[in-house]
Length: 563
Image (cartoon, rainbow, N blue to C red; front, side, top):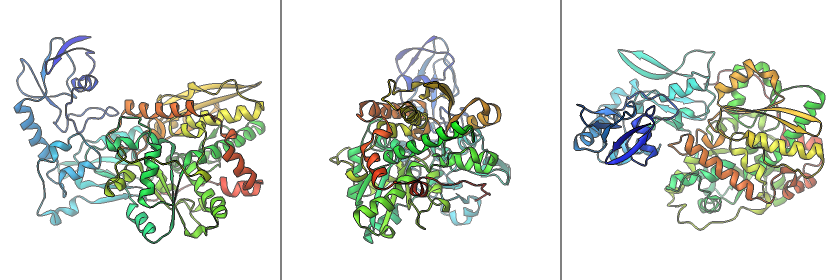
């Protein structure tokens, strides 16, 4: 530990940490653009500049580590002038006001960017040099907004994919999708989550949804577990703030007829997945069983490791299963033609846009989910319609499909699916109330977590994985060590999804997850099987194996390159 001073504040700091990290820990704001705690600092944007007493010139705070006796200034006249000049240079090729470009990613440089407007008159002549790329139905890459920080390429490589490459052309480096036919995008959206300049965006269907509402379609929204602890960030609320009722009120104000909680779908998935796991354990077939609620992970298996497709659970994801229930059970109960129902899912995830388009997930020829909005896209719809979640009065979920257990809510965090399924498996196998509800060994943001759960005389070996590179490690080196493996492609699980608000880092992800677990702890119902609404759906609708298979199960197959 060393003694330093930043803007007059004396700090005892770790000499291994950068000045930028130390400043953030001490609530000292140093603007930065290319820096992200999940990637290596490259000192590329030259915006996090500082002065060090006794040394000439300016230094990047992300690339300068603490030393004993350092006296640092972060906002001198020279720093401010140089910082603004560097920002102008970074955004000089943009076609929009740079403030509008980076607003999409809620960048802290916004206040600087608002001070000028940058336009390129000869843009039409240069457009061919900066093409747009569509990554399936999920992600748009506008190369004109790239500032060559390379965060996207690094995080894509860290995911074990490598779909984005740094290519040298005419003496300049740029990010391009690979031409290697053996590599394909899985739409996880981590490029978007780690991009500081709005270069990556998701394929936003909000205008189509607004048109469906204007055309008097019966529009039903369903929202994922993790949304309730993240969307508040878009309205300057504290990280992890729970805004369920306010969000529901905002969605109703947009024109939705009903708003349901995908945590109910998670309860249904939990029951069927636990049944499938018990059956595989008894037969000693198809082990280890992989979860399949993350479509980026499913695409990864289908494309890169198709020999393990039989290991995927055949239970549909919560958004698809609940969408199917809405277009069958709910439609029948409310006497509505399913063809007139439009289901909109609000998801933390860009790959869910791809999932809802998969033909094998249809029921009676209809898509279970018609449109997927990310957390950020829903926030933009709210802002467009002057809906402020800070000010709006909250509303409750609609009753018919509104009740969920705490086990369904924790699906949004890494380990939540495994914990929820374990609760139900224990409940079913022991046929009694559980002495133990919390399986905290599944929680946290470590890339790989392992546990052995004893259920009576049986033992289930479980691994919880987040990040596709970690999934590769498990598959290639430790597969036979487990019976059940949960995989989520994004850091921290859905709370760190590619459609969530940015900026995001490990601390923010943890606060979002902590709020989900706090919701679970406060619930009276914490096991999916004990949810009376779930019991009623099985009693009234899922009355036999044929109907359950139609609504809850699917098959997966080897996928060819789709981009």
